[in-house]
Image (cartoon, rainbow, N blue to C red):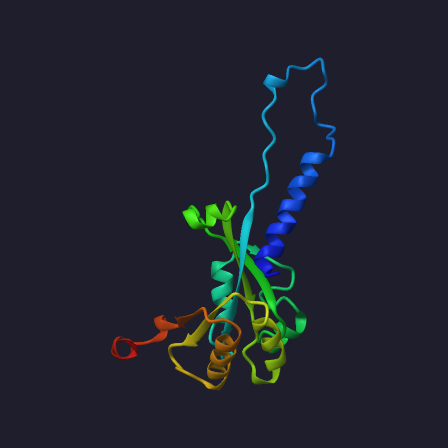
Length: 188
């Protein structure tokens, strides 16, 4: 069973539970049922886990911060050790919901929306085991490359991990604003 199927099963079970359990908010027989709004059913959300991978200081956490609308308590280097060292030490989780309407294919599968959970992975060579753990739970990956530095050792390692764990890889060229006009023209 995939992560997405587990999420759908959990949502279906919650929906069934909410429909089968009596509610204290039901109107009494003295009230007119037609005057009460219909209860809202929870959305069925397709969750897609996206690993954010790359060399240390490539801007992975900054990218996650810019994209996320919901942030877990462990996301964005909140631990004191991460802050003092200035690097990501553990996996961080955050998410955002796709604001565009889902495709007919997604709706046909029974989902109302798509949520992307971002798995912010460390980029330091000494934390490769943590990166491997994060890469095993993702459905796709974004390989973040620092435009001012290019491909670095952990960039290559993360690319290999992403290729092994998922075939869905997107490259994000980060820090392009730090390049001069001449340098920017040579990137493409």
